[in-house]
Length: 199
Image 1: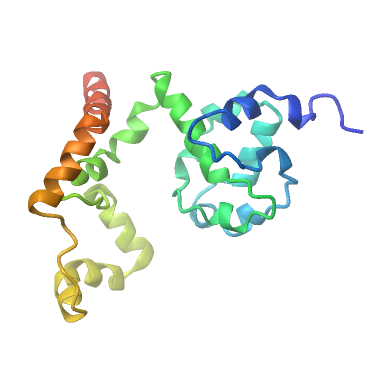
Image 2: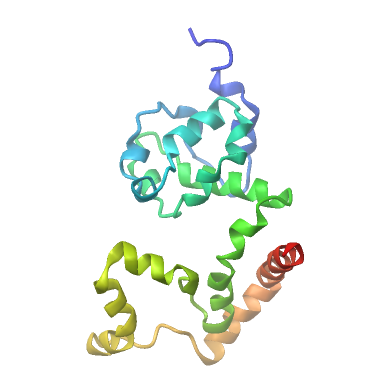
């Protein structure tokens, strides 16, 4: 028999997340058995205090303190957790929904500010690129090989017979139009203005 407060099927946060349009129709959130496979395979866990198993547990326990936990911002959105989950849960999707709830309430907009460069690169080149603010940290984490890869990427792609990965012409214009019409560009500018007005 479950203790009071542990009846995962009746929790408000669980229902909010399951009914969010970002959640897969078959997300196994209520089936989570806290096995820890998500955490044991999570690259963010290896490099930060982020723990997808604990995050899901807090959601299942309807513990709203998870929304104020700074560690939820360390998820890479790589979906390794989902691919390893035996009950088809997706801590990655849960995390995305939690973050969006925080951002939509007007909180933590500075958390997304550093990622705006990623969004603007879609506007400028049609593909995402890692923000330059992260470059030094990536070199520190991955070493000289990463630096050489970035410095020689065009030559490497040419040797492999690959075209430039940046879109051009009509293809780039189509992507730009989609990002404008979908409200993506407006959302980028909203976050940028929100953070800059506080500084």
